[in-house]
Image (cartoon, rainbow, N blue to C red; front, side):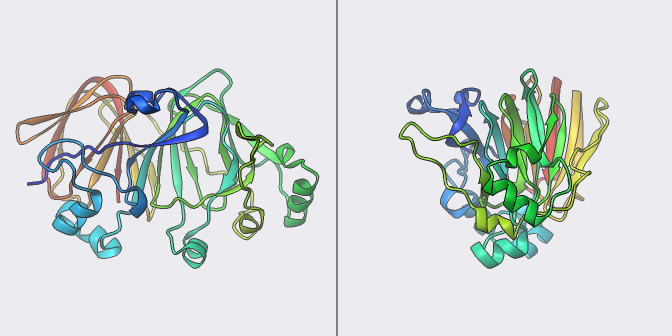
Length: 322
Protein backbone atom coordinates (compact mmCIF):
# COMPACT_ATOMS: atom_id res chain seq x y z
CA UNK A 1 0.00 0.00 0.00
CA UNK A 2 1.05 3.58 -0.56
CA UNK A 3 2.19 5.73 2.34
CA UNK A 4 3.88 9.14 2.85
CA UNK A 5 7.09 8.95 0.80
CA UNK A 6 10.50 10.53 1.10
CA UNK A 7 13.16 10.44 -1.62
CA UNK A 8 16.94 10.42 -1.85
CA UNK A 9 18.10 13.98 -2.58
CA UNK A 10 19.78 14.52 -5.95
CA UNK A 11 22.62 16.92 -5.13
CA UNK A 12 24.10 19.32 -7.66
CA UNK A 13 27.60 20.78 -7.39
CA UNK A 14 27.69 24.39 -8.55
CA UNK A 15 30.44 27.01 -8.70
CA UNK A 16 28.12 29.31 -6.75
CA UNK A 17 27.06 26.68 -4.17
CA UNK A 18 27.93 26.43 -0.48
CA UNK A 19 27.76 24.11 2.53
CA UNK A 20 24.25 24.59 3.98
CA UNK A 21 22.97 21.50 2.14
CA UNK A 22 25.94 19.34 3.15
CA UNK A 23 23.81 17.54 5.76
CA UNK A 24 22.17 15.78 2.80
CA UNK A 25 25.54 14.79 1.29
CA UNK A 26 27.55 11.57 1.35
CA UNK A 27 31.07 11.91 2.74
CA UNK A 28 32.45 12.12 -0.81
CA UNK A 29 30.70 15.46 -1.38
CA UNK A 30 31.40 17.13 1.97
CA UNK A 31 34.14 19.33 0.51
CA UNK A 32 32.17 20.26 -2.61
CA UNK A 33 30.04 23.32 -3.26
CA UNK A 34 26.47 22.04 -3.22
CA UNK A 35 24.13 24.48 -4.90
CA UNK A 36 20.94 22.46 -5.31
CA UNK A 37 19.13 19.54 -3.74
CA UNK A 38 16.53 18.13 -6.12
CA UNK A 39 13.99 16.75 -3.67
CA UNK A 40 11.35 15.30 -6.01
CA UNK A 41 12.25 15.01 -9.69
CA UNK A 42 10.74 13.22 -12.68
CA UNK A 43 13.37 14.11 -15.30
CA UNK A 44 14.34 10.76 -16.86
CA UNK A 45 18.07 11.24 -16.37
CA UNK A 46 17.62 12.48 -12.78
CA UNK A 47 14.71 10.41 -11.49
CA UNK A 48 13.97 10.46 -7.75
CA UNK A 49 14.19 7.21 -5.77
CA UNK A 50 12.28 6.39 -2.57
CA UNK A 51 14.54 6.40 0.48
CA UNK A 52 12.33 4.88 3.22
CA UNK A 53 9.75 2.18 3.87
CA UNK A 54 8.56 -0.86 1.87
CA UNK A 55 8.92 0.98 -1.46
CA UNK A 56 12.54 1.97 -0.81
CA UNK A 57 14.55 1.80 -4.04
CA UNK A 58 11.57 2.33 -6.33
CA UNK A 59 11.79 5.30 -8.67
CA UNK A 60 9.16 7.98 -9.13
CA UNK A 61 8.54 6.60 -12.63
CA UNK A 62 8.02 3.10 -11.19
CA UNK A 63 5.39 4.44 -8.79
CA UNK A 64 3.45 6.27 -11.52
CA UNK A 65 3.50 3.21 -13.80
CA UNK A 66 2.41 0.92 -10.97
CA UNK A 67 -0.18 3.04 -9.15
CA UNK A 68 -1.22 5.57 -11.83
CA UNK A 69 -4.03 7.85 -10.57
CA UNK A 70 -3.83 6.37 -7.07
CA UNK A 71 -0.39 7.93 -6.85
CA UNK A 72 -0.74 11.26 -8.70
CA UNK A 73 -4.55 11.77 -8.92
CA UNK A 74 -7.03 11.05 -11.71
CA UNK A 75 -6.91 14.45 -13.40
CA UNK A 76 -3.11 14.65 -13.09
CA UNK A 77 -2.69 11.22 -14.67
CA UNK A 78 -5.07 12.08 -17.53
CA UNK A 79 -3.11 15.26 -18.22
CA UNK A 80 0.50 14.13 -17.76
CA UNK A 81 0.34 10.31 -18.08
CA UNK A 82 3.63 8.92 -16.74
CA UNK A 83 5.44 12.29 -16.66
CA UNK A 84 5.74 13.75 -13.16
CA UNK A 85 4.80 17.42 -13.68
CA UNK A 86 6.83 19.35 -11.09
CA UNK A 87 10.37 19.59 -9.79
CA UNK A 88 11.01 20.48 -6.14
CA UNK A 89 14.36 21.93 -4.99
CA UNK A 90 16.28 23.59 -2.20
CA UNK A 91 18.89 26.03 -3.53
CA UNK A 92 21.81 27.65 -1.71
CA UNK A 93 23.58 30.54 -3.39
CA UNK A 94 26.79 31.23 -1.48
CA UNK A 95 27.70 33.33 -4.50
CA UNK A 96 25.30 34.88 -6.99
CA UNK A 97 23.91 32.83 -9.84
CA UNK A 98 24.12 33.75 -13.48
CA UNK A 99 21.50 36.11 -14.90
CA UNK A 100 19.09 33.86 -16.76
CA UNK A 101 15.57 33.14 -17.94
CA UNK A 102 13.48 30.18 -19.03
CA UNK A 103 11.37 29.50 -22.14
CA UNK A 104 7.61 29.04 -22.04
CA UNK A 105 5.85 25.78 -22.96
CA UNK A 106 5.59 26.58 -26.66
CA UNK A 107 9.23 27.49 -27.17
CA UNK A 108 10.52 24.70 -24.91
CA UNK A 109 8.44 22.10 -26.77
CA UNK A 110 9.60 23.37 -30.16
CA UNK A 111 13.31 23.58 -29.28
CA UNK A 112 13.85 20.94 -26.60
CA UNK A 113 10.74 18.69 -26.54
CA UNK A 114 10.35 19.79 -22.92
CA UNK A 115 7.97 21.60 -20.64
CA UNK A 116 8.65 25.28 -20.17
CA UNK A 117 9.65 26.56 -16.77
CA UNK A 118 7.26 28.51 -14.59
CA UNK A 119 8.63 28.67 -11.05
CA UNK A 120 8.30 30.25 -7.63
CA UNK A 121 10.67 30.86 -4.72
CA UNK A 122 10.26 30.95 -0.95
CA UNK A 123 13.18 32.44 1.02
CA UNK A 124 14.31 30.28 3.96
CA UNK A 125 17.43 32.23 4.90
CA UNK A 126 19.07 35.44 3.76
CA UNK A 127 22.29 36.98 4.94
CA UNK A 128 22.60 40.71 5.55
CA UNK A 129 21.92 42.71 2.39
CA UNK A 130 21.06 39.57 0.37
CA UNK A 131 19.36 40.36 -2.93
CA UNK A 132 17.59 38.87 -5.91
CA UNK A 133 17.62 40.12 -9.46
CA UNK A 134 14.17 40.10 -11.09
CA UNK A 135 13.40 41.90 -14.35
CA UNK A 136 15.01 45.02 -15.78
CA UNK A 137 15.07 48.28 -13.82
CA UNK A 138 13.60 50.25 -16.70
CA UNK A 139 11.76 49.67 -19.94
CA UNK A 140 14.21 48.52 -22.59
CA UNK A 141 13.77 47.41 -26.19
CA UNK A 142 15.40 44.53 -28.03
CA UNK A 143 17.78 47.05 -29.56
CA UNK A 144 18.65 48.47 -26.11
CA UNK A 145 19.31 44.95 -24.88
CA UNK A 146 21.61 44.09 -27.78
CA UNK A 147 23.56 47.30 -27.23
CA UNK A 148 23.94 46.70 -23.49
CA UNK A 149 25.23 43.19 -24.12
CA UNK A 150 27.68 44.34 -26.79
CA UNK A 151 29.05 47.06 -24.49
CA UNK A 152 29.22 44.76 -21.45
CA UNK A 153 26.76 46.96 -19.55
CA UNK A 154 23.79 44.62 -19.03
CA UNK A 155 24.36 44.69 -15.27
CA UNK A 156 23.35 48.38 -15.21
CA UNK A 157 19.85 47.48 -16.44
CA UNK A 158 19.06 44.77 -13.87
CA UNK A 159 16.47 45.26 -11.13
CA UNK A 160 17.72 44.25 -7.64
CA UNK A 161 15.46 43.45 -4.68
CA UNK A 162 16.56 43.09 -1.07
CA UNK A 163 15.04 39.97 0.51
CA UNK A 164 14.39 38.45 3.93
CA UNK A 165 13.18 35.13 5.34
CA UNK A 166 9.57 34.43 4.38
CA UNK A 167 9.55 36.45 1.16
CA UNK A 168 8.00 34.68 -1.84
CA UNK A 169 8.32 35.37 -5.56
CA UNK A 170 6.69 34.14 -8.76
CA UNK A 171 8.95 33.84 -11.81
CA UNK A 172 7.18 33.62 -15.16
CA UNK A 173 8.86 32.23 -18.29
CA UNK A 174 10.83 34.94 -20.06
CA UNK A 175 11.44 36.95 -16.89
CA UNK A 176 15.14 37.79 -16.43
CA UNK A 177 16.30 36.79 -12.93
CA UNK A 178 19.14 35.64 -10.67
CA UNK A 179 19.54 34.56 -7.06
CA UNK A 180 22.03 36.72 -5.19
CA UNK A 181 24.72 35.60 -2.75
CA UNK A 182 23.71 34.64 0.79
CA UNK A 183 20.30 33.20 -0.08
CA UNK A 184 18.80 29.78 0.75
CA UNK A 185 15.43 29.15 -0.86
CA UNK A 186 12.84 26.56 -1.82
CA UNK A 187 11.95 26.37 -5.51
CA UNK A 188 8.80 24.89 -7.01
CA UNK A 189 8.82 24.61 -10.81
CA UNK A 190 7.61 22.73 -13.83
CA UNK A 191 9.59 19.62 -14.68
CA UNK A 192 12.22 21.26 -16.85
CA UNK A 193 15.96 21.83 -16.78
CA UNK A 194 16.04 24.39 -19.62
CA UNK A 195 17.87 27.59 -18.70
CA UNK A 196 19.11 30.38 -20.97
CA UNK A 197 22.10 32.08 -19.37
CA UNK A 198 22.66 35.67 -20.54
CA UNK A 199 25.33 37.00 -18.15
CA UNK A 200 27.66 35.23 -15.70
CA UNK A 201 29.56 38.11 -14.07
CA UNK A 202 32.64 37.40 -16.24
CA UNK A 203 33.72 34.63 -13.86
CA UNK A 204 35.56 31.45 -14.71
CA UNK A 205 36.17 28.12 -12.99
CA UNK A 206 39.52 27.02 -11.54
CA UNK A 207 40.62 25.92 -15.01
CA UNK A 208 39.95 29.43 -16.32
CA UNK A 209 36.95 28.30 -18.36
CA UNK A 210 33.81 30.41 -18.74
CA UNK A 211 30.35 28.89 -18.66
CA UNK A 212 28.34 28.92 -21.87
CA UNK A 213 26.02 31.83 -22.54
CA UNK A 214 22.82 31.38 -24.54
CA UNK A 215 22.59 34.83 -26.11
CA UNK A 216 20.80 33.87 -29.32
CA UNK A 217 18.40 31.38 -27.73
CA UNK A 218 17.49 33.88 -25.04
CA UNK A 219 16.67 36.71 -27.42
CA UNK A 220 13.40 35.15 -28.61
CA UNK A 221 12.46 34.04 -25.09
CA UNK A 222 12.92 37.25 -23.06
CA UNK A 223 9.80 39.09 -21.94
CA UNK A 224 10.71 42.76 -22.32
CA UNK A 225 7.44 44.02 -20.81
CA UNK A 226 8.05 45.38 -17.31
CA UNK A 227 6.71 43.03 -14.62
CA UNK A 228 5.12 44.15 -11.35
CA UNK A 229 3.53 41.01 -9.94
CA UNK A 230 6.58 38.87 -9.08
CA UNK A 231 6.48 39.49 -5.31
CA UNK A 232 3.79 37.32 -3.67
CA UNK A 233 1.81 39.00 -0.88
CA UNK A 234 0.41 36.73 1.84
CA UNK A 235 -0.52 36.75 5.52
CA UNK A 236 1.00 34.24 7.94
CA UNK A 237 -1.60 33.11 10.49
CA UNK A 238 -1.16 30.15 12.81
CA UNK A 239 -2.71 26.92 11.54
CA UNK A 240 -4.27 28.60 8.51
CA UNK A 241 -3.33 28.05 4.88
CA UNK A 242 -2.19 31.10 2.90
CA UNK A 243 -2.23 30.88 -0.89
CA UNK A 244 1.09 31.70 -2.57
CA UNK A 245 0.52 30.53 -6.15
CA UNK A 246 -2.36 28.97 -8.08
CA UNK A 247 -1.27 28.28 -11.65
CA UNK A 248 -2.03 25.67 -14.34
CA UNK A 249 1.25 24.03 -13.33
CA UNK A 250 1.18 23.95 -9.53
CA UNK A 251 -0.62 25.31 -6.49
CA UNK A 252 1.41 26.33 -3.43
CA UNK A 253 0.09 27.18 0.02
CA UNK A 254 1.95 28.28 3.15
CA UNK A 255 1.09 26.82 6.57
CA UNK A 256 2.43 28.20 9.86
CA UNK A 257 1.71 25.16 12.02
CA UNK A 258 1.63 25.12 15.84
CA UNK A 259 0.23 21.97 17.43
CA UNK A 260 -1.68 19.36 15.41
CA UNK A 261 -3.76 19.71 12.26
CA UNK A 262 -5.91 17.08 10.56
CA UNK A 263 -6.41 17.24 6.80
CA UNK A 264 -9.17 15.31 5.02
CA UNK A 265 -7.68 14.55 1.61
CA UNK A 266 -10.55 12.54 0.14
CA UNK A 267 -11.74 15.41 -2.08
CA UNK A 268 -8.25 16.37 -3.33
CA UNK A 269 -7.52 14.86 -6.75
CA UNK A 270 -3.75 15.31 -6.58
CA UNK A 271 -0.66 14.17 -4.74
CA UNK A 272 0.58 16.63 -2.12
CA UNK A 273 4.18 17.60 -1.45
CA UNK A 274 5.21 19.25 1.81
CA UNK A 275 8.49 21.12 2.23
CA UNK A 276 9.57 21.99 5.76
CA UNK A 277 10.77 25.58 5.39
CA UNK A 278 10.77 26.29 9.14
CA UNK A 279 13.24 25.59 11.92
CA UNK A 280 11.55 22.70 13.80
CA UNK A 281 10.53 19.15 12.96
CA UNK A 282 7.07 18.26 11.71
CA UNK A 283 5.47 14.86 12.20
CA UNK A 284 3.14 13.32 9.61
CA UNK A 285 0.87 10.56 10.86
CA UNK A 286 -1.13 8.17 8.67
CA UNK A 287 -2.75 4.89 9.74
CA UNK A 288 -1.12 5.33 13.17
CA UNK A 289 2.38 5.39 11.64
CA UNK A 290 4.56 8.48 12.11
CA UNK A 291 6.83 10.01 9.46
CA UNK A 292 9.27 12.64 10.71
CA UNK A 293 10.01 15.66 8.52
CA UNK A 294 13.05 17.69 9.70
CA UNK A 295 13.72 21.23 8.49
CA UNK A 296 14.81 21.51 4.84
CA UNK A 297 13.31 18.11 4.02
CA UNK A 298 10.42 17.06 1.78
CA UNK A 299 7.64 14.46 1.88
CA UNK A 300 5.12 13.36 -0.76
CA UNK A 301 1.57 12.26 0.13
CA UNK A 302 0.11 10.04 -2.64
CA UNK A 303 -3.31 11.00 -3.99
CA UNK A 304 -4.88 7.75 -2.76
CA UNK A 305 -4.40 8.60 0.92
CA UNK A 306 -7.62 9.90 2.53
CA UNK A 307 -6.24 11.83 5.46
CA UNK A 308 -3.12 13.00 7.26
CA UNK A 309 -2.33 14.43 10.68
CA UNK A 310 0.51 16.96 10.86
CA UNK A 311 1.97 18.17 14.15
CA UNK A 312 4.84 20.42 15.25
CA UNK A 313 5.81 22.58 18.19
CA UNK A 314 6.14 25.35 15.63
CA UNK A 315 7.29 25.22 12.03
CA UNK A 316 6.45 26.40 8.53
CA UNK A 317 5.43 24.23 5.60
CA UNK A 318 4.85 24.69 1.91
CA UNK A 319 2.06 22.50 0.52
CA UNK A 320 2.28 21.86 -3.22
CA UNK A 321 -0.31 20.19 -5.43
CA UNK A 322 -1.55 20.21 -9.03
